[in-house]
Structures are given as C-alpha cells and as structure tokens.
Image 1 (tube, rainbow, N blue to C red):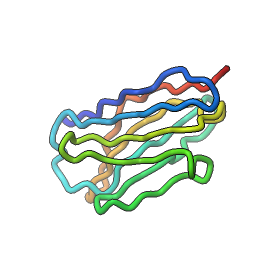
Image 2: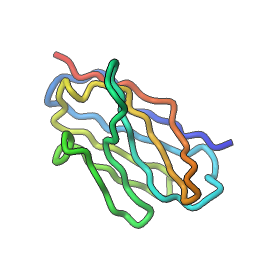
Image 3: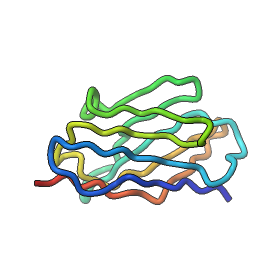
Length: 117
C-alpha cells in the first residue's frame, strides 16, 4: 500500500516562510504523471496550489505565483513546496498528491499551515 507522508506545516507570521515535504513510503506501481499540492480552508473549495509533471513542467495558482516554488528530489522520492511571503489567505490544510498515468491519485494525510500575527 502506497502512502504519502507530509511534513513541514505549522504556524508562521505574515511574510514568513515554510517548506512542505511529501515523501512516498512505498513504490507507486505506475508511471507518475504529476505531483503537487491542493489546499482546503474551512468553508472553501479545494484549490490546486502547485504541480510538477514527470518531465519537470510546473504550474501554480495565480494566488501563489511568484511566492511558492515546487521542486522534486528523485533520489529521496520527495517533492517540496517552498512557500515565501506567506499571507493569512494561505491558511489551509495542504494535501500532497501524486497522479499516475492510469488516472489513479495517491494522497497525503494533510498538513496544517496557519499564517497569523
């Protein structure tokens, strides 16, 4: 059974930074199409924050463009989300995902990011 383990969330003041990590605990039994994070705040719909494809292409939500950077370390089987210049509006639970070519998605347990003064 494949598991995605997330870490790096926490409480930070506006303007601060956090780095999220998402590591696979087992081998995903299919070719990976994309990896990244969704986030969801109470009362709001789930939002795609950032993604990176198997060939290295990246995509960001307009609300985080220029502030967040997604990257990967294949040797560690880990994807990272560097979050800079954080705003209160970034407060949410962040869910890591990996989507394979077959269409199946694997999800992390979620990590809370709270931006508050």
